[in-house]
Length: 111
Image (cartoon, rainbow, N blue to C red; front, side, top):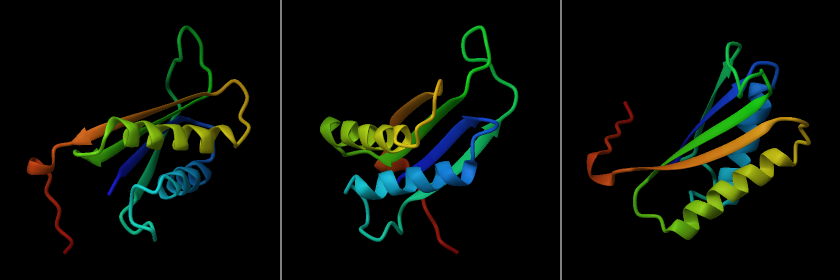
C-alpha cells in the first residue's frame, strides 16, 4: 500500500516517472502482485535550487505502513533508484526516501 510521491524539476516527464516508480514498487515484491495497492503521483517544480544552481532532480518519498524490516525498506529504495537510473538521465540528482506510517493511526476508506 505504498503512497509514492515524486517531486521533480520541471522539464522531466511526470507520466514517465509515475510509470517507472510504479514498476519499481511492483517489482520490489513487497506489495500486491497486481499492483492494486500502489499509489503514485508526481509534482513538478519550476521554482527550485539544488545547491547554488538549478540542476535537474527527482526525489521520491515512499510512504509505507510500519512493520517492514530495514532490509525490505532498503530493497525498496534501491529498486526505485535503479529503475530511475535506467532512464539514462545526465546531471540529474535522484533520491529516494522510505517513510513508515504508523499502522495504529493510519485510516482508509473507499467510498
